Length: 191
Image 1 (cartoon, rainbow, N blue to C red):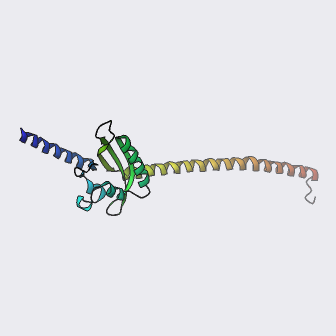
Image 2: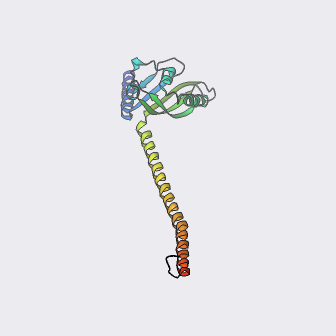
């Protein structure tokens, strides 16, 4: 029976690795009490770092986070650690090759007991969402460009209307004044 459980455990671990590979995500299980090592699959795929290149501590991970995003991430992280439950954040990290990418970090924060509030474990995934962020930026740029073109067209119509209305009235007034002058002069060009 023990062999059967061991085989089932190996099969479950293999399925977990396959699912992690298929998801193209970094999958982590962090024990915050330090009683066991961090388990992370997909670390190299997402960050460019191998397990040997890193110590997988939260301080090491925080060193990868873009300096502009770190204060907000730490604040968000601390708030979630206090209350437990689900955690989700998007921020930039710098890969080993120097490339800066956007990631979505989704985790479940597990406490010893619901009443204790002592967080002991983080289980989650980190997914490279750079392509999605860039696509959203492209969509926002396209929308801004469309809005700019609409504004320019509206402004052109307004200017054309102002020119037509104002200049048209002045030209009509001049034409009438010239007609009056022509009538008063009796058509004599010397006057």
